[in-house]
Amino acid sequence: MSLYSVFKFAAFRLDPEAAHHLSLSMLSHFPKSSAELFNTPEVDPRLSLKVGSMNWSFPVGLAAGLDKNGEAIEFFSRILFGAVEIGTVTPLEQPGNDKPRLFRYVEEESLRNRMGFNNHGMEALASNVTSSLRFGKTLGINLGKNKNTKAEDAPSDYAKLYQRLAPLADYLVINVSSPNTPGLRDLQSTESLKLIFSELEKHRTQCPKPLYLKISPDMATEDLDALFQVCHDYNLEGIIATNTTIMADRGEGGISGRLLYPKAQHFRLKCLERLKGSSLEMIGVGGFADFSEVLDYWSHGGRALQIYTSFIFQGPQILSQWQNEILEVLKITGARDLEELLKNPKELGSIELS
Ligand SMILES: Cc1cc2nc3c(=O)[nH]c(=O)nc-3n(C[C@H](O)[C@H](O)[C@H](O)COP(=O)(O)O)c2cc1C
Image 1 (cartoon, rainbow, N blue to C red):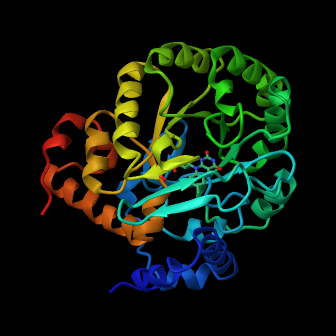
Image 2: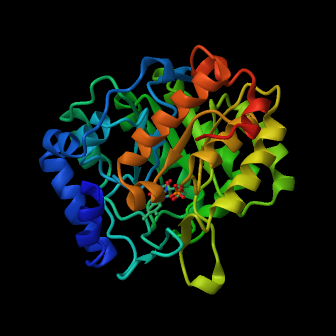
Image 3: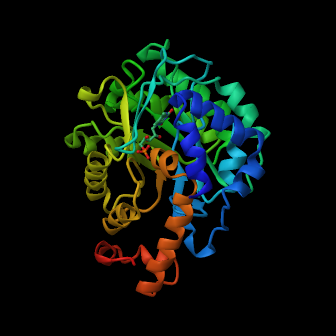
């Protein structure tokens, strides 16, 4: 039995949000000993990956929402993650929705959340980033508007956040895809995005950093071409696909984990088809739990990815296990490193691991 199984056995007896806060508090107070306890291996240098203009030390990053305030950056930087995305942060602190707002589906290795961007605001996050050890790990900051900010003032919220936080980040993400802030997903329309991106332009000139847009798997795929055109026109580096999905029969909020995977993967493949030949990068997220799913994503031209829910259910060893599996694939195919492996994606779909 692994140490994480023991930890999980105890944590899963607590209310999900209480377990979350307790774990994050342990990881933020004891980052070094927690990372040592989970016996994290070194990253193999052959597994670094170019992601747009960035370089990730490993192809799998931490998805937004787990460390909303950047309290445990050091811990997440010490383990294998190739990049750590913190947030969603809003300009001002806000409490989020009423509790309970986080639910587990243990058998289905899935979560449902209706957190509503609970966070301590951009100043608290900035101070956590400045005081954290990162060991050169790529840091992303995910930005959202305050609940009380009217839709027409959303561009100003994103501009304030960009101006304050871009100097501290390696990349930034505009989040308009959470189902838990009323009206937020309406900002995915091309008209609203144009207003947000033009408001950001002068700040981006002053502090140019890779900018990504995180999108929902519930968007109509017919709208993707127009959306990608706007991202291209405003010089975004790429998109992050996907956020959580709504499953009305499960209740309010967004579903993540294995239940999300089929929809998210289908949506990602639609995005990849449309992005062929485009300069926009895609970071995949949503439901990845088994290495075969990563291989499938790569076989369709995907590259970097992120996880959240499978990290909760499987623990840090999901990363070391995937590292071993990627190394096995390198051996089978004779590829020198991950970059070379991803140059011939088609053959990856048929690989069988022992
Ligand atoms: C409890 C919880 C909170 C989340 N909060 C955020 C958030 O603040 N911002 C965001 O962009 N995504 C947030 N997400 C979405 C994740 O970043 C990710 O897109 C989604 O969970 C799908 O990935 P997964 O199946 O690997 O969890 C949250 C997810 C969960 C489960």
